[in-house]
Image (cartoon, rainbow, N blue to C red; front, side, top):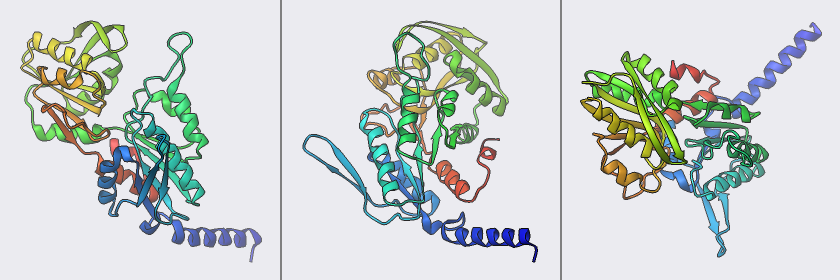
Length: 335
């Protein structure tokens, strides 16, 4: 037998043996765990994938130090850890510790599923003597030896370049657009609350075949909008304002009021990540919005505004996990 052919056959046999052990079609070796911050979403993702959430626990010491651990064997497994990294910083630290624990427990691969990638607004040095927080977080995750990152609706797309490992940046559009279509709204118009959200809003408007409006805002300081100007005609339109994050809700509430002041028939808000800090809930309650639709990337507090409606991303993340395991295209989900 030709030597090159023999070597090729041996490599093929080796690959086949390994596929049977940890390959794409073997669900037995896929384990999904969740940090405490997103335990509910992690449970839904595991169920949508067709399995149960892995068993893990956290020991807390009297000084508030904590130590996560896995309560079942994960040797040779593909371990997916679901944890959003919104404040407090313990959420990020817990994710890092879980990655480290999985590596030390001989997991074959460790993939961090971060529905909300915190610190993403610190994506550049926009003034003297400040940190680039998202780059630092990327360095910390890499130092923990994570093999892959899955996240959704990054605040700044360039954060993907901070990683030297595979990073799948998903879009909530696959969830939101189907929800909007089911609402069957007449005279629909998509709006962006600021120029930074205009690219996302434009993509939605194109997919839905409707008009687009954009708000131009000027900030007095962080979380404080000084002025806002509308670009586009919203008269007699049912407006949906799109954004990636609702933090204090100042921008999106002001944009909603601006739409109504310019003749809109109704205004709704869609945002991927409901950070909702400070006066956000009170502002949303008192806003002109008929409803505010968000995802479950961040769990809502008990005193959440009654106007908020949550759509789950569990099926999206489960589908992406399945596609990763089967070596299938992820980008095709969003075409």
